[in-house]
Amino acid sequence: MPVRWLKPSRILSIEHFNDFEAFRPNDVLGGGRSKPLDERNFSFSRAILPLQDGLFVMQRSFARRLEADMGASHGIGLIVPIAVHTIVNGCEMDNSMIGTMRGKIPTQVSEQHPNTYLMLRFNSDMRHRGWADFDIGLAFYRMKAEQMQRLRGAFLDMFCVASACDDARQFEALNRPIQETLLAGLDTVLVPDSVRRARPGSFDRHRKLMARLDERVDLLGSTPLYSDDLAVSLDVSVRTLQSATQAVHGLSLHHYLRLKRLWATRKLLLTANAGLSVKAAALANGFWHMGDFAKSYKATFGEMPSETLAQGRLR
Image (cartoon, rainbow, N blue to C red; front, side, top):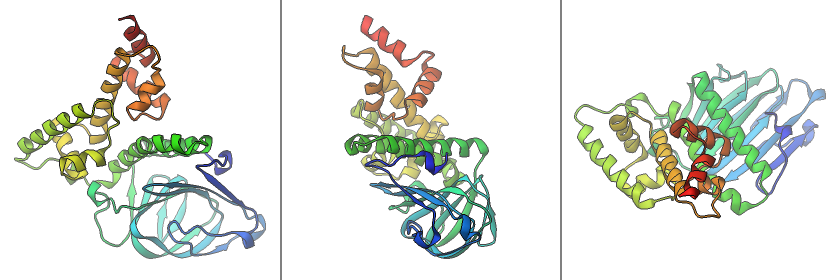
């Protein structure tokens, strides 16, 4: 999805440059010095989405050579490709690779043609999720095509929602569930396999933790479930919860919580009052993408949520 398809809103700002002299680099991961390969046909666009937990920028670059101290002094920085083929510090980066940066790293980039990609800066270093287990530097992680397509789609949906939303409070309500979807997608590649596999002899400890997690989820009722909040309430790390759900249920933490939220939504639909809508029930349980919610709901329960709501009103 080209940046030019997005419209500015109170949530999302859009910038276009058709003159290199007017171009201003964005310092989300370090501004640097750019030298265009074709100054006469210069064009650059970016969409800037500030979030409570960081800053996301989607940009359409130009053919150039870039020198910069890239990265994040605090937290962690990521580059996620939309349509990319470039050389970064001598490494060829394509559409299957995510770049991850800790600290400030001297970087040389060669873009022989325009590329579209996401530049993300998280305020947290994300070590509590088990991401990118190194101190300072730049690393590339290769994703399977299906994983990358799903992750890329979630990011694009997020920018579309921000582009169409002029109510800051409404977007704030959607912000957490949207980010939860993205974090789960990034977990699939940035969390080492060793974290996902349970260690011998640890099953009983994991089983007890899952019992505490289930009890906590039941107490929350229809409140949206977020991995960071649950980990804090149980006094463990997200990494530990990931290991426990994989060991006990053979599922990722994201998938397990998603099933819990689907069941909570179903219960709400079956006991609905006259004014409840499917959308309201979904939003109340942290689902922000209605198409994806409906697809998951039908795959899980064999019927559309509207059918469940109709059954509930007959009771």
